[in-house]
Length: 144
Ligand SMILES: [Zn+2]
Image (cartoon, rainbow, N blue to C red):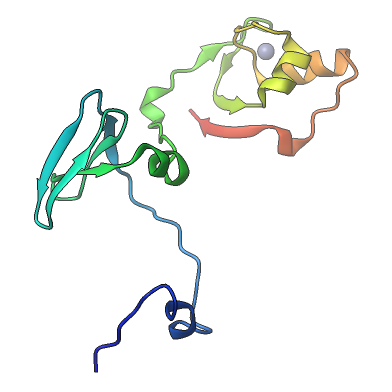
């Protein structure tokens, strides 16, 4: 017998079988600067300027509302997009792409300092200002 599933019974229907999943797929999308309508198998869906137009696995476009895009997706950067940069302090090529919070960057490097600095030189600059960098404050984005 087919079961009707809705938000009121779905928790109980999956009792003790719920697991967490994270989507592994990459989605290609661009933010529309125009209102639009997309004719899909399920009918016509409408989107407005600021919403996103994504492609499914078969190349069919579908809309993603901007709030959903912000909540569910983060931009994925291919390693090809990164080029090793030269540390302005020690002159070595950087092969680690990393980031820290804007607040920590400002404390250590100063506001509006956009210079490329390697992690070692950043740690040294922090130490010189008696700022301790904790490992969890540094996010490694890529090794290139
Ligand atoms: Zn350096």
